[in-house]
Image (cartoon, rainbow, N blue to C red; front, side, top):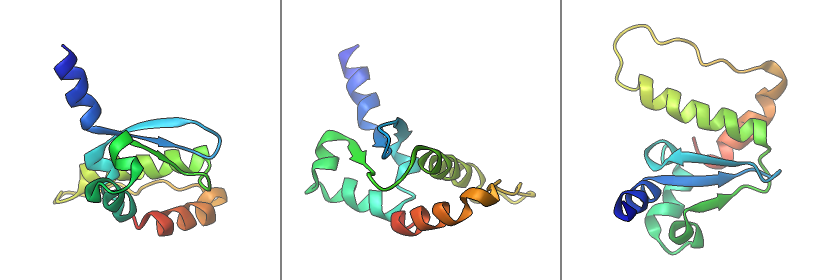
Length: 105
């Protein structure tokens, strides 16, 4: 039972927004971000050892939308049928663009 919990913890990463909200995301999804991928794979970062990445500059709604996009990307990569549009509210578009740029997503 403990081995299962440890394996599950190894397959996820915790992302913490500027307000302190924690998102638990599959590493496979989070590693769509080249920034996160570098932090996790290189192992030299404390984030790789602890499995927690703090984003002091990214608000909760924006980090949530980024996480949604990662799962959207995983779901629709290599799909040959029509892909639905990813919804982005105009009022968060600029902040989302800045976060996506920082995360290299």
